Image (cartoon, rainbow, N blue to C red):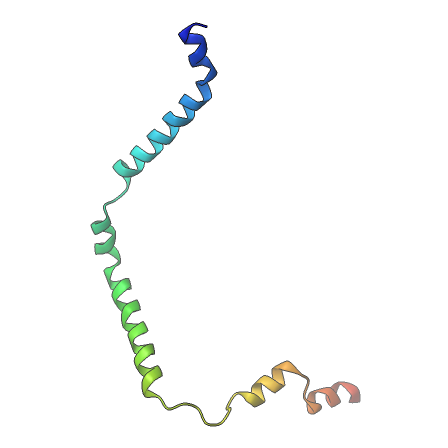
Length: 91
């Protein structure tokens, strides 16, 4: 076999490799630098960090709940209360 015939067997491999190489190199050339992205989004990162710190601090400071305040609401959502059920029967 000649060399060109052997190379033609791998034609799709060469094309695929060239496309991948061009894609990766264009991402590095066109994409903005990490510091540019960080400079643009630093207020968002800072505010998110402050909210997470506030949640952790308030979670440790606040006393644990003694009574179950939302239990009545959960019962209402989970099942049909008697009043609601009776209003449909009377109609």
